[in-house]
Length: 113
Image (cartoon, rainbow, N blue to C red; front, side):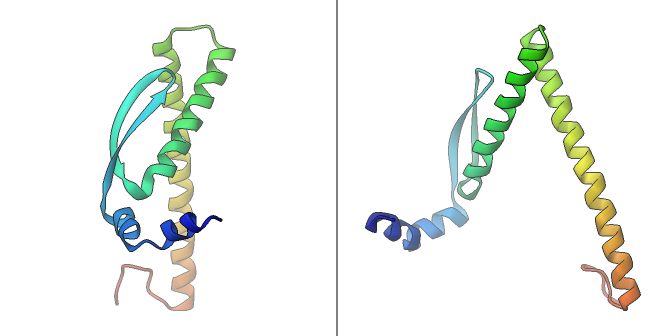
């Protein structure tokens, strides 16, 4: 790592900025520009999301000869499906964790006796 890289990692101003500041980002989702204001700390996640959506759109475009609007609807559906599947799994895991805590005689997080 360069000396400048070390300085940036330990710069108190940048650390504070990461925690407090919002930044403007321009995304390219399947050729459409989208401007967002996001927390500084979320920019890597936002870029990963942009990459994933573009990959999905590319794969859908190869498989289906349809309009851009239909492809976007298909991509939105796919991500909504992923989201609800993960939400269901999370809720089930939370339920099981709470059951384990009850067996151990501990109150689940957020609940007091």
